Image (cartoon, rainbow, N blue to C red; front, side):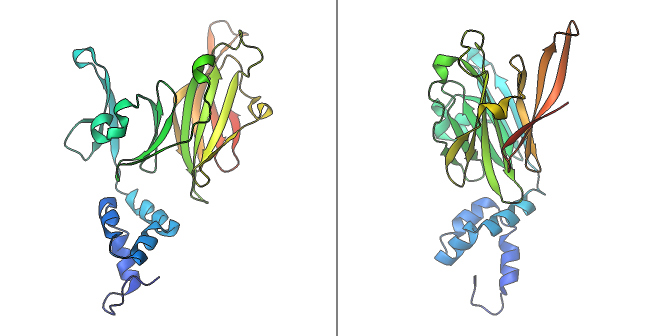
Length: 251
């Protein structure tokens, strides 16, 4: 794909320069031509730009602001000289009610604290994608919700894991103690794991909401009470392979 017809600007040199531009500049330069727009949207360019951008690390700090009894989740992304809430950063979050969030490749996956609606947010471009709803009956069945977000480093496939724990399993024996669905960005669709794929999860297991994705695998710390050892809580690691869409338990 020819980016320029000027012999003084070889294509490999132009590409090298463009790969080092900030995201805001790339978005502006999409207006230069259809060729440039297609070039910037090419998965190969996106992947190479991400690898270079990762060398410029950003840190996001989150805390609760209790000013005037109006608790707010406040975020600061360095290097930024101002503190800003989700409301200030993106108008769509004003009524979103952020409950959980995950960070991966500069993207933020957030889950609504009330109706468990999930959105993917790019702070660099201020763009957000709200995922299609999959579980529409959670308020009645009182599930505890955990989310995970990561990518397959080989296929550059981003996925969201929606993991639910039935807090009233003893009252609703016909409902499974755990449910899990996986969202693929490429198809904009969900797939729910079968019951037999969740057999490794025990009924009294607690899943920590914080998780991390490394080399295509999402990890959570899980804890459970060991009845054989009085007063003993055991800790394991729950892993989800993004490519194979398989859960594993690591002792």
